[in-house]
Image (cartoon, rainbow, N blue to C red):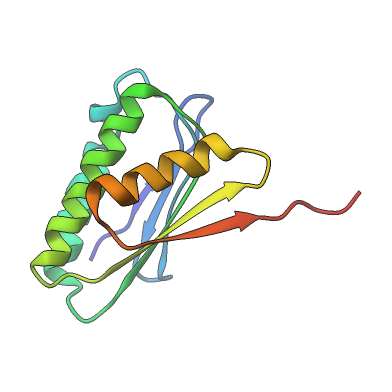
Length: 130
């Protein structure tokens, strides 16, 4: 299974989907110019992983600082795809990280969980003490 690495930019998140290190994460700000184009390689990787990594649970960490409205739609489509693959036997665990001071990001994740009916764990990020 190939790895997918996309570097973080000012308006797009870092993507690390690396089976050799068992590291699967999307993190940062998500407001690329065209969210469908940006996330298409992620959709493709997820579809491939579901058919080739049948013996492994994929723990996907999602950590966003900001999500644009177009990214909200595309991420919902991605989670819907994951749910569909799970219904066919693939194994994913979604970890939704949020900052304690950013209830908007937490609420977006909660909406996804409800709308997509996907198992999602919510993890509050803790800051470092001053």
